[in-house]
Image (cartoon, one colour):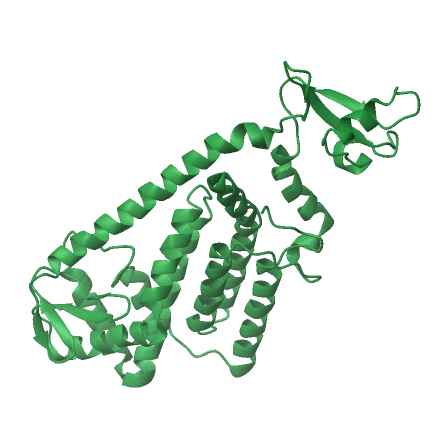
Length: 353
């Protein structure tokens, strides 16, 4: 029973989350076109990711889902929780029913208001109770599609979560196996098994570098990786992967995780250049290019950071121009407004449990 409740809780979160995820990704794309620093979009997606993991109701008058048509569509998406299946009877609260309605509701069957059970509540303006009678003559509430399907769906969901978590753990163990033999070098570690630098660890994140880097490449990459650690990106990425594991059946989540990872990489590039100075931009891009040319088949863990998407990052760096302050403020306001609209539920929303 606990598994079914947990599934329904995250099912509800996912119904609203998938729409909010799509809307927020679109806003992030618009903000990126305005050349607003990536750290703002990364922060917005990171906060939204936490919302996907926290099964709590946040009703708000400014929620995106207060739009009647959208709320109605999402409500119908979960209609299986209120529709009935199998053989059942209906007792109606109308004069002349012989006391059937009172007898059924007295047995514990819930009475539904017209808008809860009828597609035409203006024509059928009376309450109803859906019930069945067992072989002993006991009156029982009619089973809903939810009660029929949720035990199976919850097991499928849990199996999917288990597979995703197993993949994350196995890939993490494979990376840790590569990092068994490292050479400390100051506050970083050199590993011959790596072709790309990475950050690994949670409470004590460490920077691991491949052997053979020049002094300039080392300085650039270490500065970049320190930005990841300073911003807590290694923790955010692990939680983002956990959100993907929980909502693995939502296709938008498979865009959300790489989008968040890419934005965190760009934000760390920006932070590194802020420390190195804008004059180091071309040399920094050359360091990224040199690392990409050394790439071997390397399958990083979804729970760690490694250098990826190098081509688009280099293009962005070479075209990089700071956005005017008004555009930056506008982008931050847009992201903040979109976040509030997308993380809250419509007024009157109640959680599944």
